[in-house]
Image 1 (cartoon, rainbow, N blue to C red):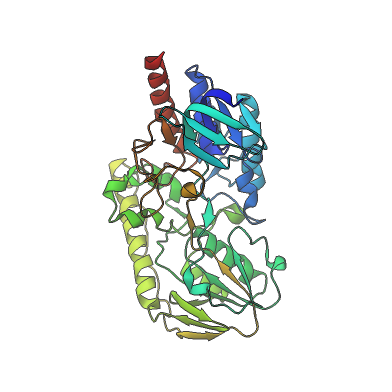
Image 2: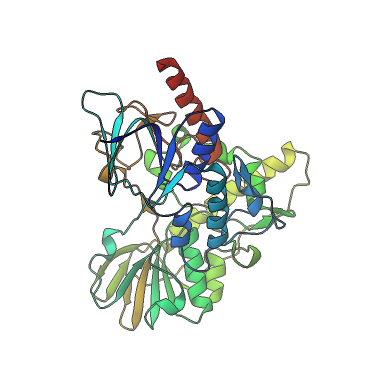
Length: 409
């Protein structure tokens, strides 16, 4: 017979664990199902991966950072260890239980979850499977010669793990920049197909970039305030937490020897073609810099802090070829963001929009009552999936679930 559980949370990353903590505070009986181990998705990142936000921005409910290096940047293993310790205190996580399918029960009211060896029925389900579910592999790389390795951001581990030769990095966000920097510092010849990502110095006025932005309304931005629904996929501000945190953007990469190109149009065998838009790409990034600069200045003035000096960016050579011979290249590394997998295992028509995001009101599906989402990019605000923001969404969801269950008893 199927096991009956009032509330099931799917996923034991930061979103699922924060939701479990908040449900527990409200006396809601529940279980968290985790395919592997708590926090295991962080271990899927490359070897040298660190948080981009300082350690003090880890502010999960019941599990804030309390270590001795609040201004440092935890490694992937340290983040995973933090979440495993959190899960151990909560005591409600079943590990090694992947959920392969979720569908509404016939006749309405509740859901059926299919795992490896059993079926579970639940009145309420919270999907907390993370913001980074499936690496996006753009169609432009589909024509790459089969004897050139094509590695996505979850497949990359370190420079030594790639075949010998030059590397083409496709992407412009934090991951793409960090991987390109690591490769060029290791001695690789690196070419980067660039996108329109914003950038800013790591620290200005004696404060970290994140501290300035968290004091502003930047992370409070809601989806309806964006230019378009697709903007939810926009790249984060280019920066790095490696080696104590440092500036990382197109100018620092160019100074290291990375060859910058416009965005990738196609790869035909061993020929890569790029748009002649590198000047526009750099200009777009500089516009992002000026937006963040104005935000920092506003914060300083509002809080009575000294306004930091933030000079305009220096010139950058934007001359770039539109075609590249990939003979001699060992690999193409694709770091162009992620997309959701909800529609692959949740059997609910109309569950997601054209961008793959759940169609919801305050985290609850509009087409499937009592099906909730936590840990989604821009679920409620820009910070919804972040280690300092997911707790608020978890609290809101747990409060709604508790109230709903109380009314039904």
